[in-house]
Length: 174
Image 1 (cartoon, rainbow, N blue to C red):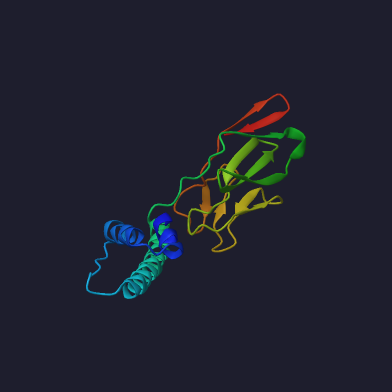
Image 2: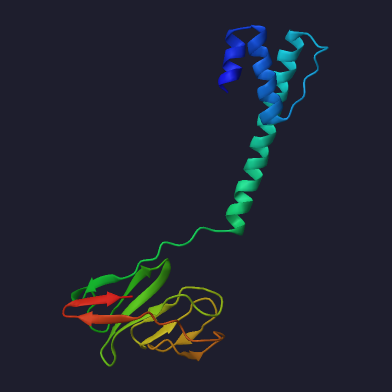
């Protein structure tokens, strides 16, 4: 780039030769000495412009393709904590843990339970039915118990459990 700026400001033969070498070495263009200096400048500039536009088009195609093929790693949350008072007895709270929607249920019989909210059938988000003490998938009527086991419907496997432990008044998830 520095050489091209020099060619535009100073028209000495030495600077034109440097520009030719630059174009030949880095861009791969060959210039013919039969052409005049004005034609060389014009051709070199047009070839440079065309190569820049072509490489921009190639990069704008290749970059999204590479991002699609090799997606970046997810940022993982090692642990998450909540206070016990945030989830009253018999209630549930929706959270997002490691980029996965999850639910924490404070069951009177079983205590605190953490499950993924993503249905194992087609990936819909299950909802907590407080009255019937179960999880219901609204898409295809899949029904899970509070342990995440399939009671009825099309889900092929239970909801994934998320490990949690109680430390005093704090619920530690993960």
